[in-house]
Image 1 (cartoon, rainbow over the protein chains, first blue to last red):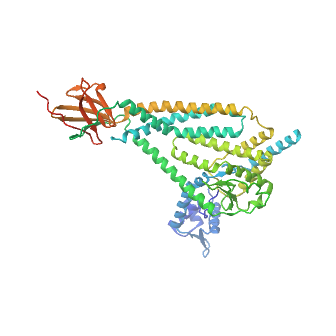
Image 2: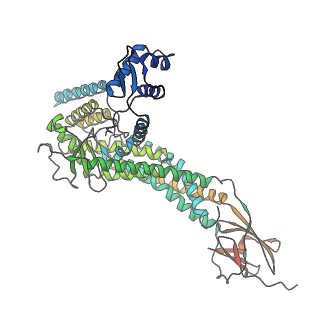
Image 3: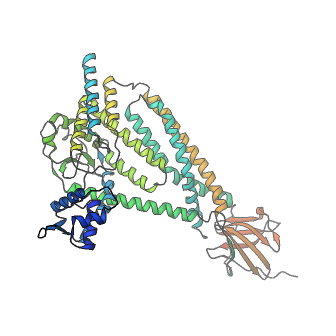
Amino acid sequence: MTASSPALPTDAELQILRFLWTRGPSTVREVHEELYRDTDVGYTTALKLLQNMLGKGYVTRDEELRQHRYAAAVREDETMRGLVRRLIDKSFEGSAAALAMHALGAKRATAGELAELRRLIEELESGESRTS
Amino acid sequence: MTGPLAAPVYALGWGLLQFLWQGLILLLAVKLAGPWLRRVSPAVRYRASLAAFFLLSFLPLCTTLVALHEFQVLSSMHMTAPAPPPVPVASPTGVQGTLTGWLPQLLLLALAGAGLFLAWTAVGWIRLRRLIHSGRPALLAPGAMAGLADAHPRPALLEAEGVDAPLVAGWRRPVILLPRGITGLMPEAELRLVLSHELAHVRRRDYSINLLQRVIEAVLWFQPAVWLLSATVRREREHCCDEEVVRSGGRPLALARALVNLEGLRSRGTSLACAVAAGDLSQRIRCLAAQTAGFDAAPGRLRALMTAGLLVLTTACAARLGARAAAIGLGTSLPVVTIHAEDPAGRFILQLQAGQARSVVLDDAIVPTERLVQHGRTLTILNEAGRAELTLTVRSDGVSWKPRPPRPS
């Protein structure tokens, strides 16, 4: 079963949004200096994050000056409400599924496991055709 | 806690405490029976684990009721003359709660937990119904729908957004939910096999039994044995339905292939996983493979009987022991109320526990228990000649009695 939740910022994106909500429109350098000073997150990574957020519509970019300034495009209260809703959703996630009978189990099989299962079936089938 | 409710509440508390080790014993019995049932049909294993689950669920109630009864028997005595109209009332002057003052709190914790889990289940039910409502009738090729028309009870066949693998849900009217667009993603033959697995669930009313399991799991949330047995029941249930598909003509390996392909489709999607374990896929495939080799159904009946016997015996012993322990616990854990009273004939002191007289001091002498006769709320104190010397009525706020006339000095 799924829960089709609207797109919400990831943890890293949320961190940047909090910075923008408090400090207002900022450049990539300002964001990088403040948030990632003592980490191994490089300038280009921060730039990429902000560019992704621009694509998702979380921030807007002011390209007037040479140093582009990014500003938060989503409201803090709305985002927090959305996150709380997602938390509640997540805690009740299994509740509906628990009341139904499913054709498959809970754990998703990885590609490797699937390949192995297919191989197992091939083996058994060839074994069966040999004995019959 | 005093009054007429004290005994049942404490009895329930002790009963639930006993339940903690009783679950362990029953789990051990199931594990013991495991090897006997290994090469027997999944239907027998399913019924055994389901029986164990329900036996386990009845234990707390059983233990509590028997303990209460035993306690009454231990602490009450035989019949007596009817009580005269009472006049004065003497109230307790001392209450001595003994070591299990925390028992009502523990019971409250158990009930609070049950409430939370039941609420979680209720929300899940609402969400499930919403999902079903969002579904639209699924149109499958006639070949894939074979068997649907004769299914009883007849399930509704819907497809919905947000379903990543076929499921069966409902309480009285079953619904089969399919992932949207599944007809385009799976060949007809494979879909028919998967559907016949779901139809097996419908025929066996598994969807109703599963709901009952969930409610019991919520109420008995603190006992891990309940969860473990429930998971075993679910696992065996899947094997049973796989077996039914094979029995109605499906090739085991074709079903295995269909399941693996279904799993492949699911892993491609972006849906979030459900928190329910319905059975490990590789284990199911191995079981299906074993079915191609055929399994040994012959010793099934004897072993099923032995298993049933073991389970019933274990449950009965656990209930007996648990009730005895709970009754003893009850005897020591209820608060003892001391009442000092006086009437023109003299003084007397009573000690009561849950409305039952424990000891009486009348006119500065302890009354031997053979001369204390209590029937329900009426306590009669006999003199040496065996005649009623004093008759009291036990109330929730104390005792009342008809005052004795002053003694001739």
